[in-house]
Image 1: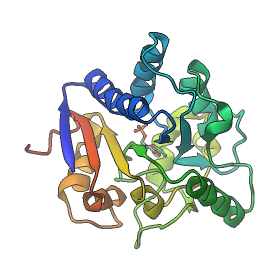
Image 2: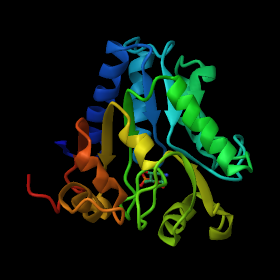
Image 3: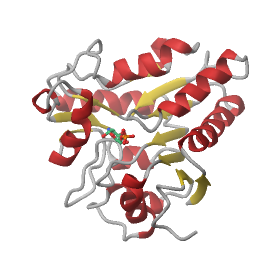
Amino acid sequence: MKLYRAKDYKDMSRKAANIISAQVIMKPDCVLGLATGSTPIGIYQQLIDWYNKGDLDFSETKSVNLDEYKGLPRDNDQSYYYFMYNNLFKHVNINLDNTNVPNGMEPDSDKECQRYEKVIADLGGVDLQLLGLGHNGHIGFNEPDEAFGTITHCVDLTQSTIEANKRFFASIDDVPKQAYTMGIKTIMQAKKILLVVSGADKAEALYKTVCGPVTPQVPGSILQLHNNVVVVADEAALSKITL
Ligand code: GLP
């Protein structure tokens, strides 16, 4: 695990965007694993900026997203497809046919999860997986549990995640209670992983992820066992870690 200290959110976003852009430049037809949440927004803005300046070309790039709320259609403004479309896809020249997000409208969980695993396998796996970190140490929507969830599966969201995400919905009752997410095994099969973390409210989760025991109670802690993980975090998020 390599840990890079960024001064603040903007610096974190630029450093992480540099890593993603290096991936796209070195392998234009790479498979990017993408993430939602507030943390990656600055990264996507930076990538869009470099695309507009002619420094980046996504025409051959493929993407797979980590997760999607079950029950939300793509055009719902809280769906993760909608997020990706509006925060990245529509601003760059990625071919939408090459972008993949779990289908939240497929009611048959087994069917959708198997389909999504096959999509990833058929693409040859993920070259670079971008991850944010939940306050409880979750990655994707892999919540703290008795065991690590393996492949893409349907999860019941924890109360803390529902609480954290209610800010985007009209009321807490509107927050979906389930989601489809890549599993821990799916994530760990990515060739490279880029974890981005910002803010003092994530300091405890980042400390447990990086320095704590590897345990399904802190899903992100499994990343300690991956051989190619880069963490870019700002000073506030790193405040509990002595480098
Ligand atoms: C959601 C997403 C995660 C994300 C997390 C943190 O639960 N499923 O992929 O990492 O939120 O989000 P934020 O970056 O907004 O704190």
